[in-house]
Length: 221
Image (cartoon, rainbow, N blue to C red; front, side, top):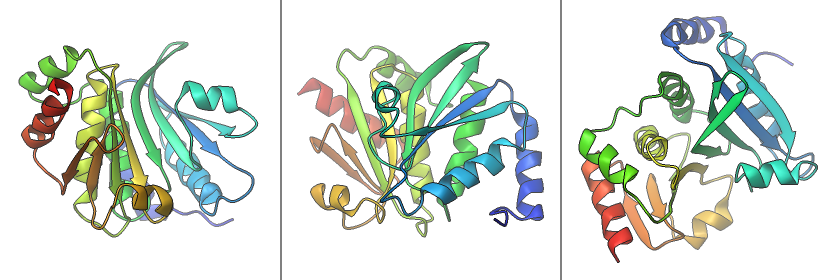
């Protein structure tokens, strides 16, 4: 099978990955049937993680390894989970992506890897302090499409917030691969961030303060 990444893109990624600080491990969950993009997503992750020794990948079946899938809250195929690897310890920050990170979303994958490797969300101190003080869970699903240039910013912001609290989980969702879920939350344009199963919604790639305000509203309700 030919490579998905050409030599020029691979070299650009290699240069970006010179900034990797700490190891990152990616869990990939696929299915043998009814998963159009599983093989391509797996191959893409294999090619990306092969670029740096600080990156590792494990491949799992959503059905055959259902207990592990539950542990990492993977309920769609394909899904991948970005985690920090500290020696033998895996730290799950709650970063998920359901679907293939193609088109503009490929930059989300690269940015997430760099962010997890740095162990730094890059958020303001005010946002960090609030997220660390959370006492109620927050689950964000950011609906995106590969052709949307504004979507990566929305996914990265949600993933950044997940890094700051064990009560926050953030999942990028490729809307065209999971149309039933997109329809459930009335996704008519992307990016759309749905919070706590539809209790809150943010449309567009909004600034950090706007997403924080919506989360604050929900947890205070």
